[in-house]
Amino acid sequence: MRIVVLKSLRVLEVYCGGEPVARMHAALGRDAFGPKTREGDQRTPEGVYAVCVKNAGSKYHLSLGLNYPNAADAARGLAEGIIDQAQYDAIVNKVSQRLRPPWDTPMGGEIMIHGGGARRDWTAGCIALDDASMDYLWGIVEIGMEVEILP
Image 1: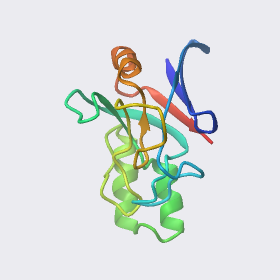
Image 2 (image 1 turned 135 degrees about the vertical axis):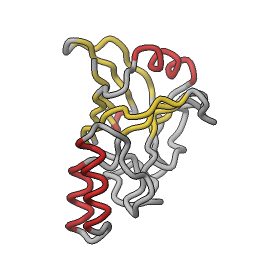
Image 3 (image 1 turned 30 degrees about the horizontal axis):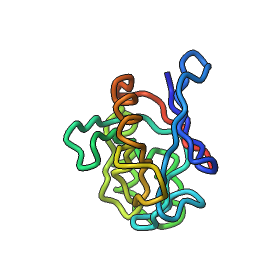
Image 4 (image 1 turned 90 degrees about the vertical axis):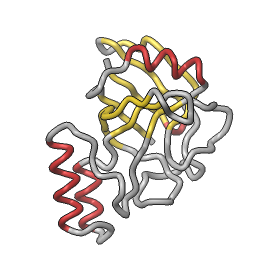
């Protein structure tokens, strides 16, 4: 199973064996155009991530944490001078171990798929669903599941 988010359509799709099995409306960061590059830019990342945290105590119903920044994000951040070598190394180390990367770098972090509503783009960079859709997703998602976020 895997998840694909189509930012331009504000849609989250669930695939099983290459076939779509669910499609739901999604809200994004307040500045949804373009990939996330730094903390506070209000953008939803673009790339291939994995679920690294399941939080049943989220203030937005339920949440699934993504491993943003990943190694590709970290390489870009290092090349652009957004993060330093130590931050790059820490991110790559955690991602290579399939663990949650540091969420406190200048690139930002703590990107989630969570409940709370999908009527408009309102998050700080997360992907928001209505609570019923989040209940469904919560029931099928496992740590390590791939999440591809496309423009």
